[in-house]
Amino acid sequence: MSNTQLKPVNPGTRDRVSAEEWEVRVNLAAAYRLVDLYGMTDMIANHISARVPGEDSHFLINPYGLLYKEITASNLVKIDLDGNIIGEPELDLGINRAGFVIHSAIHKGRHDVDCIIHTHTPAGMAVSALKSGLLPITQTATRWSKIAYHDFQGLAVDLDEQASLVKSLGDAEVMILRNHGLLALGASIPEAFNNIYRMELSCKAQIMAMSCNDELVIPSPEVVARAQSQWQPNVTRRYGMLEWPPMLRQLDSIDDSYKH
Image (cartoon, rainbow, N blue to C red; front, side, top):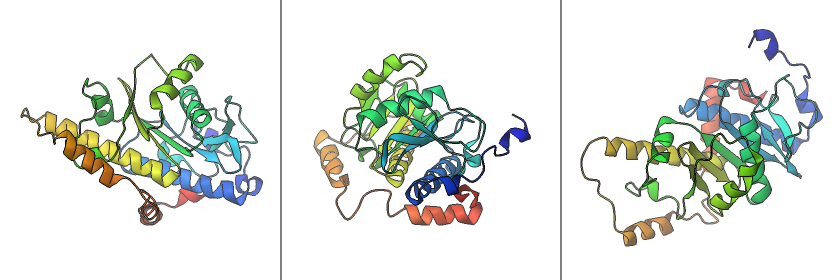
């Protein structure tokens, strides 16, 4: 892609959207930058989406052709559940087909979800290829009482896979796409980011432990169940919310261009 393609063809996105949508755009762009900062990217592949406030059938996603560190609030693309681009996107770029297929299916099937993050990290892909899946061998890996799994059906570009994808997910917050990667959801952008961060951390720890060629210590089912119950959020502690403001400050100290 030449530099000329990065020049906005429709500048002034902030003036064309509501204040509520702009706030979501800023936070979603921040999520892209944080995924990049923590080394969870795959060049221009993968996607993070967020539902548009007050527009249940519309969500924001990355333009296909930018690195995560190039994502800004203005250049995110608004699409509907059928993949149609809504409004005037800032850049003359399309969207990733797999991003539309996966994210539209979940936004349509899970109205409790406002943000979805999908990654292809080495650790996540490695665990996705293990028959055992993610094991509760660390405290962090007991974060979720339910981890969903979805069998590989080829590249996620066919609409026919949407129904089975949503069925596999059920009401889980996280899902391992077999032979593929990780998927994390949240009722907000901070919560979804917290879920993908902890999933990635859990997968890294498991692969490191398994590489030591020693027997794994796995807590008893009773202890795992107790830890899982202790992790459950309550009204005073929704995971990701407390962490989000300092993480934004961290981004601002590096590069605050995501806000534009």
